[in-house]
Every structure is written in structure tokens, then in C-alpha cells.
Amino acid sequence: MTEILKGKPVADQLKEEIKERVRALQGRNLQPKLTVVRIGANPNDISYEKGILKNCGNLGIETEVIERPQEVTTEEMVELLESLNADDAVSGVLLFRPVPRHVDEEVLRNALDPDKDVDCMNPRNLARVFESDFSRLVPATPMAAMKVMEHYGIELEGKTVAVVNRSLVFGRPIAMMLLSKNATPIICHSRTKDLTEVTKNADVVIVAMGRYASVGKDYVTEDSIVIDVGVSEGADGKVGGDADFEALQDYVKMITPVPGGVGSVTTTILLEQVVKACELKHA
Ligand code: NAP
Picture 1 (tube, helix red, strand yellow):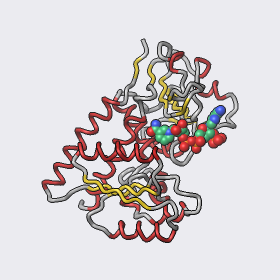
Picture 2 (cartoon, protein in one colour):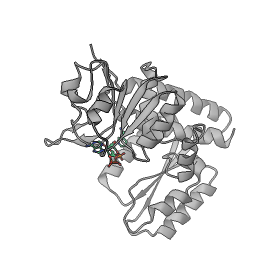
Picture 3 (spheres, helix red, strand yellow):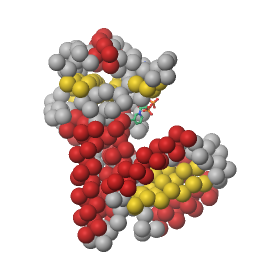
Picture 4 (cartoon, protein in one colour):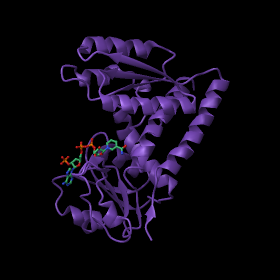
């Protein structure tokens, strides 16, 4: 029988741990604080922001939202990030991206203090991950996928893991995390030959293509563990993952649902990083 790996129990456990860590910091008169920086008022950003603020409130993390108009310049944004870098009360900063076209995102990525960069956008934080240093701030989505596997006792040592994604935000950093667990990651992409053979021969298949319900039985075996990171909309407007969940939910060994899987852990990891940033600053 297929085990459905839901994200909520993972997020709930993480939240309990975060609350304890916040209490410990408060006991030392330290208060973790997240500053959200938003350019314009995109409804998706606002709805994501609402969720973050609510979760922070529940966990005892202070928040602040700074909104800048759509016409803001790169220089003004750099000035803002530098003032947040210098502000001792701010533990972590989350800049909503993508930024408007006329703003140079590359400059902003480098302007934010790596030790406040809870979304891991500064290349210096990614460089640490590529040196197998996970002690500071790390990218949230790959870490969320790792936490889901850890929570459900998926042993990675010696296992072959096919990752269908080679982006800097997901495929490449998770390969480093998998290596640190002594797994053998195989990074796949749109030019991979015989992709279904690669995935069928892997113990764990992690998909993050953004191609709705495209991973069916031809990609897996009955022993496969499927971690679905993709989030996209089907023709009917329904949100789902890369896996054809209907087809796989009674077939593979384990599978994460979408929604309700890895995505529900990602925001919690982001908030955990605010606490981690505060702890590191005052270590
Ligand atoms: P991306 O940069 O577009 O990467 C997609 C990857 O999938 C690329 O490496 C691409 O290969 C590969 N790919 C696409 N079609 C393929 C095919 N037919 N066969 C094999 N490989 C294929 O996207 P991303 O930003 O990494 O995000 C990927 C997905 O994760 C999206 O659905 C996004 O919504 C989701 N996501 C989820 C979370 C979460 O918390 N769950 C967070 C962030 C993103 P090439 O490199 O060759 O183009």
C-alpha cells in the first residue's frame, strides 16, 4: 500500500521546535524579527505575505512589511537593504521576487547581508551550500524536501536519487544536501536521454519540472519513493504537482501530495531561518 507523505505533520513538528527556540531567545532578551520587502502590490505576493505574517505571529517571530512603489530604482532598493543590514533589530529579510524588470535583481541579491538572507538569494550563501556547509542560511525548498524525507524515515545513505531539475534554487542545492547524506544524486533535465529509465532505476525520484501531472507509471516502479516539488495548474485550473497523483497514489511505495506536501513545509523552513539568523548573530 502506498504511503502518502503529507507535509503538515512535518511542518507542525518543525513549528513546535521553532517555538521553543524563540522562547529560548526571548529568555536571553533577544527577539527574532522578519522584515518582508515588497515592491508593488501583486495579489499573489500579498496573499503569500499574509500567510507568512500569520505564521510568524503564531511562532512568536516579530514582523514588519516594507512596501516600495513599482517605480522604485535599484539604487533606492540597495539603500533600503543596506539600512536593514545595519539594523540590529532585524534578524532576517525576505525580498519578494521577481522584482520589476528595471530593477537589477543581481545587484540586490549581492546587497543583502548573507547572514540576514533567509531566502538564500545571496550567491555567497549558495557558495557555502556548494562547499557542503549547511550551518548557516540555506535554500528553503530543497531543505523542505530533505526534511520531509527525514521525517518519514527515508534512509538516503547509499541510495540513488534522481532529481529532475537543475536550477540553482532547487536541483543543484538539493544535490549537495543529498551528497551530505551519502546518497548518489543524478541530476536530470530537459536534455536527459531516456529520463524514464533513469528515474525507474532510482530509489527516490524528486521531481520539480513544473509540468502538471506529467510523471506517470512509466517513470517509476512499485518500489519508488516520489517527492513532488512541482506546483502548476492543470487545464481545468486545478493546482497540482508534476506527478500524476491519481495514477501513482496506489502504485508507488511512497509519494508526497500537491498541494499539502513539500510546499506546506517550505514556508516553515523560511521562518526557521529567521530564528537561525537571530541565533547565529548572538551565538
Ligand atoms: P525551473 O527553473 O523552470 O526548472 C525546471 C527544471 O525542470 C529545469 O531544470 C528543466 O530542465 C526541467 N524540466 C522541464 N521540463 C522537463 C522535461 N520535460 N524533462 C526533464 N526535465 C524537464 O523551475 P524552478 O524555479 O526550479 O521550479 C520548479 C518547480 O518547482 C515549479 O513547478 C515551481 O512552482 C516549483 N516550486 C515549488 C516550491 C515548493 O515549495 N514546493 C518552491 C519553489 C518552486 P532545463 O534546465 O533543461 O530547462
